[in-house]
Image (tube, rainbow, N blue to C red; front, side):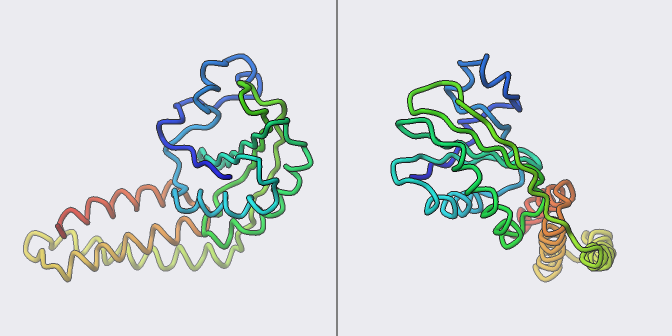
Length: 204
């Protein structure tokens, strides 16, 4: 059974293995990664669904992310075997590109007995997905054109703030957001996401 960590479940701290052992009060709130990452709740759910078939039905899965680190906590009546982590890693590495979230560089898998505070173990896997240089080139070329058009729309927005222009601006920032995320440029994707939110205010 999968459980998605909500923003309320997390704190602003990125805990190390030593922190996980010492700060029991934080662990009770599942505070092992920081919120505010670009990964969307829908993708968290997809990741949890990908993992479920590999695990026993009695095992619970918690999924969260900070920046370029994906965290997965496994819980069961008995401490999950470390071999469970080795089943998860190749599946995550294989499926992340399909989810268009290629900024993840590291996978941390924790095992913990239900009712316990501190994880019994933690395994770390590098899962960086290499992005072809040609793909970066496509993104840069497309983004330059979109930004040029967006700049012109912004400069003339006072004179012409029609819905057509607003939709063009929304399309531009949405395309930049998706392209940046697909090549692992999460900071640019976050900025574009913010611009998209602001642009949508003019549609309401």
